[in-house]
Amino acid sequence: MAPFLAIVVDALGVDDGLRWFEAARQARQRVLDDERDDSYSFGFAHYLDTATGAHEEITPPVVAALRR
Image 1: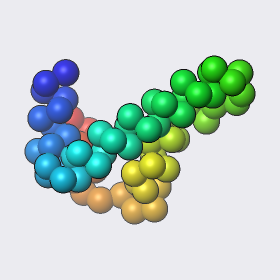
Image 2: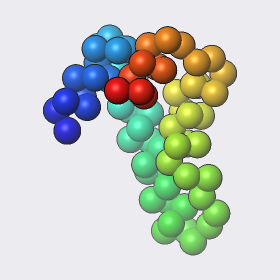
Image 3: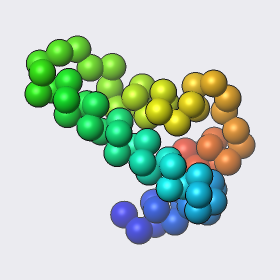
Image 4: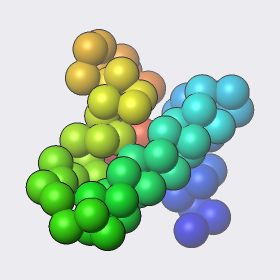
């Protein structure tokens, strides 16, 4: 897990890295809520994309972080 944390922080910086991890936490919670409510889930990737705004603009650091 530590290497992944380092990749995200190295690629995004500390502040954006923290925001990304918070968005990941929120996305995971939405998936769990969908499962608990037995409702349709768009999935973790979609919820993370939406929470981070990555669907609006893909930046080089985000691409680099996802390709490592």
